[in-house]
Amino acid sequence: MTDAPTDFSAAVFAKTSAGQQEIQTRALGLSPLARRLLVLIDGKRTGKDLEPFVAGHPLAQYIDELIAHACIEVKTVAPMAPSRVLDPAHPQPGETVTPTDWLAVLPPPESRSDKELEMARNFMINTVNSIFGHHNRISLIESIYGCKTTNELRKVYSAWAHALETSSAGHKRLPELREKLFAVL
Picture 1 (cartoon, rainbow, N blue to C red):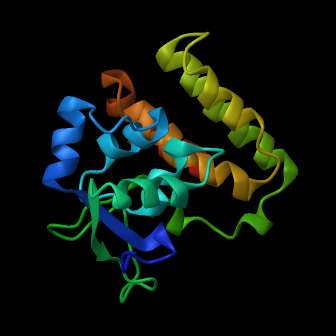
Picture 2 (picture 1 turned 180 degrees about the horizontal axis):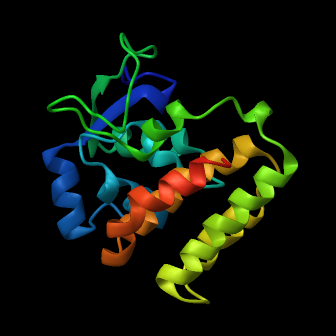
């Protein structure tokens, strides 16, 4: 077996040469979710960042499969507690800010009311519909709609932010939309 960590949330993964080859050849016959994960692994995202892309499925299962096929390797294990307070609005030179980093500036989820949860949920759904049009990104909208707590909604935030970043209009407006969302999230 490998010496990979059992808690993948803080680990950063990188593709191996075998992983690069698998993307080109599809010789291993990976499952669709394992293949999606392999494509998304870029040597920068942590397991926590990758989790929304396999929503509803155990991340560890697919990471283990990719490690077993030698398609990926553990690049680093990010420290669990940062040595300084992260300020995503003012990143340090060379610092990459991921969608989940933005959540660190929010107040505890328990401090949010049901009305604020509803406002945040509606805001996220409306922005997706506004940017992509109705009947697009249905699985994202269903994930947002299904959230019953602020904590659950915060877990979907990175998928929401990633979706907006894929659109030129969403990418331009993301800082403004994030600020409005964080007033209630």
